[in-house]
Length: 496
Ligand code: BES
Ligand code: MN
Ligand code: ZN
Image (cartoon, rainbow, N blue to C red; front, side):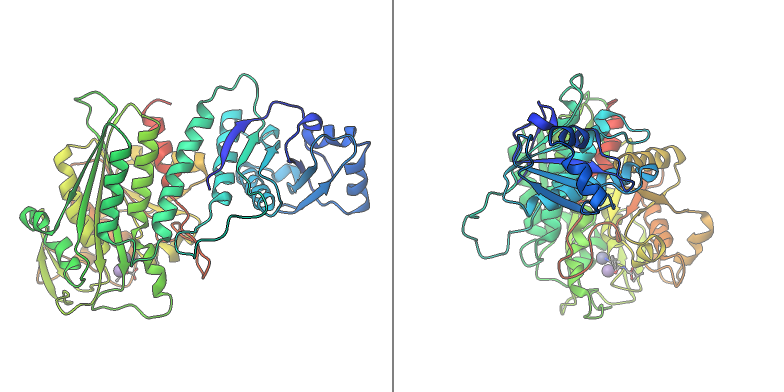
């Protein structure tokens, strides 16, 4: 169930929410709401701090029940860590920790007072948005493929009220709710198993999105259409699978008719077995997440449409499954891309660039002013940046700065890698215009260089989200990144 967000209307001590959320710094300093609650409760919180029963350690949470003098039945005290180190990231973490703790309590509503805390360099609107995004990320729960459960006997958290200054209008709340919706959409698609989330399924989801949102135009191309368009690289990847490919194109015209659109392109490999260059079994299940680029651009598109952003936007998703079927392409096959350039497939596991190159050529028919592609493209990017940052590659310094700023503002950060001419020779081969493999070194960059050959003459950036798109492990979940970065970028362009 998704969380509803409202504004808090009362001072902490008279608020009647089922649970109040207040903060405590490591040195024992109480947040403003905690101070008021403490005063109303005759110093009960301060005594617990003094006795060592309450800690302000970052990430700690303690629930106090039935404090005399306080209207709410429960007070959740969240540790904020060292006051001097309390920054945007720690603030968002504290909000997320609070909601994780709330979900374990028998409450269906709570009032989060953490948004009244000072966060260096951030205004009230930012604090509200960050709290909502952190809260909703913790509230999301994947349920699609479990046996339907009996309705929970204990209440589930459904409403979260947030502290905000009276003067603040609704727009921060509206924006954050739309971004949260886009993030959830992306996470759910990412988490679905690949026997459900096939290329056809992605196509249906795009159609459904269009049907539910007036003004959205949707086209889903099928194999015969792709053949007619000459997408030899995309089709080469698809031919090893029984699940036929799709190419999804969504359009939103929130701007003037003659405004060139922003274009988002997302890698939609619904399962990446590696093909004939097959991957090792261990960890192969994580390759169901290889469509998280597609999920990310669809989620960002959804948020942009729900916000009715006054700009034109197109979203293109090449959707395929990479399998080693009897008709699968072979290492050394040469394919002809839609652009006319030929590619020698030296490794069938470097399939992302093969579907993206044709999608990047296709999207040019919309005459976009900017193209941003998003892809779980290389393990090398994870080696370089870990799970914390997405890899950003572009030759356009302005576009780089805008995207990096959007990532910093939303804590959905990216880090730039170079696309210098020096790396391009790694893609040379004796049998085609380029190879799909760049050799041992700089794998994230040579993949970016490959894509750059298909975007010449356009302002273009590539986001490698191989590390940031999901959390590892049995219970690892899609993160919904880079939806916040992309929507912030679009909000900034729309002049918000
Ligand atoms: N989808 C993978 C990239 C990937 C690997 C993402 C691990 C997240 C975790 C991609 O299609 C792939 O297989 N890339 C190869 C490229 C190589 C063959 C040049 C890789 O990174 O090993
Ligand atoms: Mn692969
Ligand atoms: Zn892949």
